[in-house]
Length: 297
Image (cartoon, rainbow, N blue to C red; front, top):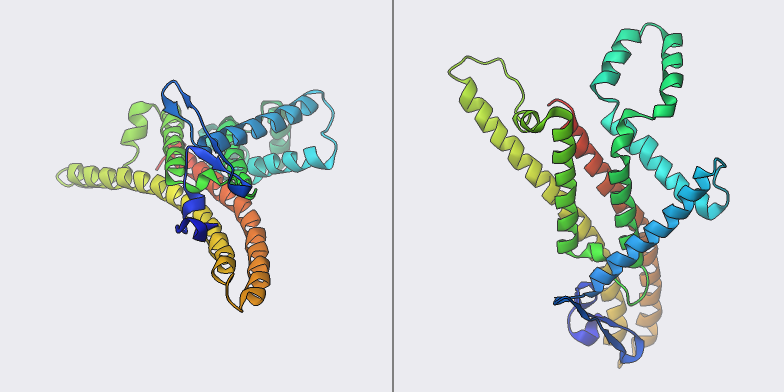
């Protein structure tokens, strides 16, 4: 596939068309002067899949009955895992929760009663769940679509992951500003320091600039990490399959072809694991950055 185009990265690039078997090419139209591309369409497919699945799951849970069936239990399990193992422990309960815990840490029975009374209102960190869930499942579906032949992983494009990182950073700023105020969030980038008056202004300014740069770098790494991992896996698969074309007219074909197919299947199985892993890492890091934004330095 890659060899036929003379470009190892052809299948992970974005194009205004879909390439199908036997040389079939489907050109994508322009909408209001904006040309559609393959990755744009695949992202819409990922959004539609997530919407339909979780709309069905929400309807079943809203009925008051537990979701039944392996299909629905699988997606519910993922959602609950992100809630209970990522968002709640990473962000915590906020300032009010910490004050409450310190006031009652000596009375275990009182803690249990308070936890029971707070249960209908949910955990304080649950207000960040819609965003983190959206990040996780959107990235996951984009990754999984790349496992289908002649499709592609939109997350293997730096423009897509860069946009996701910008959205994650915007969420950090929004939630941090909502929690601490706009001024409080930006001034809070620099921690309070007990320094002599003559040293404090330049030190605070220097650390504030370092922290601002660090916030930009952390979100840039968020984009590069996802892009590099997804692109690397698909490129390895293309290279392994390319060995078959290289050996097509040699005596090594019947040795190279089976070995390449077995290697491709092994890498594809690894890519399936990586699709879930990278979605988890993106959601976890986005949650971590939000937690850093809403809590004091």
